[in-house]
Each structure stands twice: as C-alpha cells, then as structure tokens.
Image (cartoon, rainbow, N blue to C red; front, top):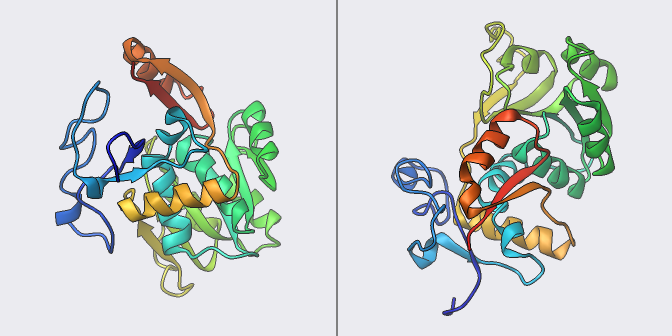
Length: 257
C-alpha cells in the first residue's frame, strides 16, 4: 500500500482475516465506530484494500458491506458450486450481489420481489426463476415446484420469513440468516431441522481478506456492482429516505466531495 492508492475500507476494521470472533468485530462502521460519511477518516492499513483500476470510487464503495456479506455466505461458507440452487429475497444490495456471485459460480437462482419491474432487472442479470410474492403469497410452494419438490440448497434470509424459508429448503440445505426487514408472520418450526440435516447459519458481513477476494473476483470476471442511485455529500437525508422507501435496486452510494 502506498500514499495516493485508492482504497476500500472493510466494515469491521479489526477483522483482517480468519474466522469470526467477538474481538475482531467489536468495531463496525456506522455502529460502534463512526462510519465513512465524512471528508477524512483514518484506519489501519490492515482494514483497507486497494481498489482495482477497473472500478470507480463510487463502484468500490458498494462492495464492503452488502458485497462481503453475500460473498461470506455463498463462497466462504457454502463453497457454492454448479448445480446448487439459491433463493434470494428482494432486490436490495445483498441479494443483488448474491445474484451476481451465484451466477459466477454456476448456480441456479430463484429471486423474489413485489415488483415485476425489479424482477425483470434481476432476470437481465441472470436470475433463472422469478417470483412476485404479492401475486404469489405462498412463494415457498412455488419454490418447491420450481425445484421438482426438492427445495433449494441455500437461502439468503434477509426478509424475516424464516418459517417460509425453511419450507423452501432442501434436505441438507442451509439458510444464511442475515437480516430481518419485517416482523415474521409465524414462528418457524424447527422440529424437522435435525431429521432433514438442515442448518441455519448467521452471517455478519466479513473480513478484509473477503473484501479483497470479492474485488478480485469481480475485477477478473469483468463484473460491476449494481448501483441504483448516487447521492451527493449534502444529500445524506435524501439518500437515507430513498433507502427506507425500498425503491432501490442494488446499492445506494454517496459521493463525498
């Protein structure tokens, strides 16, 4: 690393590499540590990754949280391979990064959304099957139908629908529990979990090394992060309001300066 290098900062400044631990994740950007909506910030060299020349700074800003979360789940944990099936919920940053990563590794992708327009955008990125959960409220049944009754290998659970996700999961499959944007409509039935050798795995972003691997993978495969909207430094409130509206597809980025 040299003075003048363009860098991306990891969400957990103290998690350079290796397995998750409480000590490595005490500091998180925008959590226990101030985030990067600032003109100047300082971090140790182990917390930053040099940005490949193929990405603008706005594009690089999209990777460290949502992108690393998806990479951690599908690559580090799942070790995704061709023939696997992945269920993605919605079209926010994590799900759209996961769509790009899943297709890069040859997996089949089923994605849900309440918007046919967003589903068409997801299809253009390679999604194999589309489900509008407003017109198909029992979307887990459609998932089973699309997988010949087996269910999917992996679910990225970001919507607070664990009970439905379990019903959509194949025997031996894994749910990566990432977030909950809405209250669950029912309690999950966990009694069959051991009998079907299924697993629920929590995912909380990832390490600086994962960020470096993700940037390298996108760069070498000529992929770009999907940025829905870019806001100026003085438009922070507008950016947060837009994020809260759910109108975005992919990431929202703020430009400093």
